Length: 361
Image 1 (cartoon, helix red, strand yellow):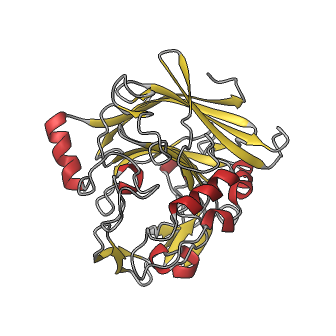
Image 2 (cartoon, helix red, strand yellow; image 1 turned 90 degrees about the horizontal axis):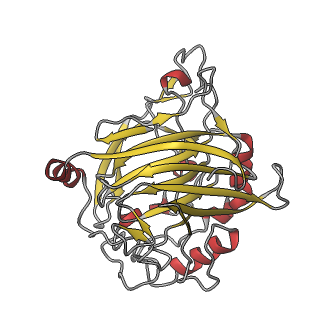
């Protein structure tokens, strides 16, 4: 297995035999792995996900390193990397303002003019208290160099951008089941123990070339298959990611009255950028596997596990609660203090498999 220990663990990618990134084509397939999240508190994120990076890591005359050295990263957040496609991203290198969960505008960065965007499929982002899987489609095939707020996206100013930064995800706690994921035997999935995570990519005609129409999830623990929780807070229900569930979640969680005065009207970026069909096209082309463990000093990972994501949200409003974690907890100092008191914060990924539906568990 692969053990990643906070805070020093790097992001890790899977390589093929020729030392280029292994590209997984997962339409009409399932992907399975084991994970141990037992030491990850509120505010931490153990992530296993796919991004549509170039197979050689943008290796070329300006970048002789390539995939063997972990270059060429991109994701749906359009990160402003220091090097993009072999070129230094040094123009307009400066800080910019961003709004914290507490409603304050602060200067963050610095970062360069350009971002690097690509489709992202988050198979698992989780800690002991909450977990989610999320599809992030993009407007462009493979990688796209973005420039400016309209292209790179800026939610605070109402720009979706080239990729759906929010994505359409399934978090059992947010969907209404507070007893599905947590520490101890009272939860359907006991995060104090290792678990097997199974994700199935179902196509319209059950072939490798059909349109992606559903992303199913279930777990195996102590020899028992555990179905995903149901989306009880959504009118149409459901227990997997479909375009219908995504539309219903957007409408339900973005109903009038849940946004600060002056905030731009929410946009359904998932639908605008092609939904599951677009996500499936990226999965069909092939995506690289990445694994990491990280915290979020700026946003405190509240979007994943928080009792609310912004200071003026009401926890009683549908979809506001992502998990049971306190709003004021989760910055880097909290994580460092937790590690000093309780010991190592680490995640172990192991037994990675993929194959035909029903073949890997």
